[in-house]
Amino acid sequence: MGKTILYSFWISSCSWRVRLALNLKCIPYELKTLLLAQNGEQHSEEYRKINPMQQVPSLYIDENIVTESLNIMHYLEETRPQIPLLPNDKIERAKARQISEIIVSGIQPYQNLILLTKFPKENQADWASFWINRGFKAVEGILAGCSGKYSVGDKITIADCCLIPQIFHAKHRFNVNLEKYPNIQRIDEILQNHPAFLEAHPNNQPDKPIQINN
Amino acid sequence: MGKTILYSFWISSCSWRVRLALNLKCIPYELKTLLLAQNGEQHSEEYRKINPMQQVPSLYIDENIVTESLNIMHYLEETRPQIPLLPNDKIERAKARQISEIIVSGIQPYQNLILLTKFPKENQADWASFWINRGFKAVEGILAGCSGKYSVGDKITIADCCLIPQIFHAKHRFNVNLEKYPNIQRIDEILQNHPAFLEAHPNNQPDKPIQINN
Image (cartoon, rainbow over all chains, first blue to last red; front, side):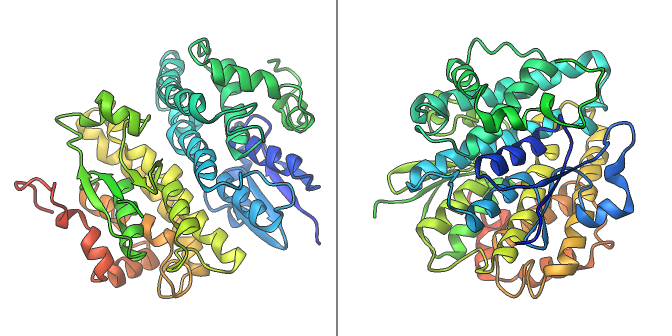
């Protein structure tokens, strides 16, 4: 086994999903942090060869590059199934992927920084909140049917890896009121102190700027 | 085996992906079409119970509802693997999922009708073209490395099921110039006359309005 390198940005929810999957599966990795916002390091010619979308995360693993967060999680599941992040049951697997896909394609793209900067600053939070509430309303309904201790039953899945970073952005970037979402809040609280989740948290990333507090 | 029902809208690229997967896997299904735009049938209380995001597609199969297009394709792959839409090789599988995810979360959300209507009509095509070109530039680069006859090697995969509907929207809704993307154009041409692709095409859907020509 060669080394595994994660290209990551501390506050990026897509990077965070993969940090969680790697931690939960106990896969050791080296972190390469990119300075996105001010420095635009994701646009360098060198990094474009790694990630053609010029974004994080990218994972160097098994002497290949794998990109796109859900794809990376599936790759890890297929190559390192010892600690699974998908249930065995086919319907439960579909539930975990359904929740993940709602967040990955139905919420996160609409709070993307490139998109937000197209709006006046004073409208950005309202815009993002609209899409987060739309998605969370759906996710809350799904969780009412399939959650146990975690999003799908009593084992941590890729759904939790997608949900927790999205909750953080809802609360701390866009001030979304989560009172209407008791299952989402409950799962957030339960996972706050889980070692894999603590380690992956933006506040515990080496590239977190010193001056920002959350 | 009970019956399989696809909730679909003729021009929706997300519905189209699933129509392709069902056709390619030779899974018989009944089509239930929803009148989205004018009538907003996706917002009915009855349909919200089927799809909490109030969108198409939804698939009733094996006496369960499965939603979100990539999730549905994965479910079909897990339960009906006889005609596969993912390669055997783990790296090639990751390539097929990478291309799919770029389209599903990196392009399509930005041409979503709910989003587009937030912009003045005269700016909508420019806006959508920006995101399509950003994604297609990445996809073209990936295809240069992994495509054969189709997107990944010589067998049709979920990547083709995502790519073909996205090309149609690029060409016919937003007038995107595809000359810069020779691999994308080539795959589009090859699949134009494939029976499964012909059958799934918006022009061959029963809910296509009579007055619209493409």
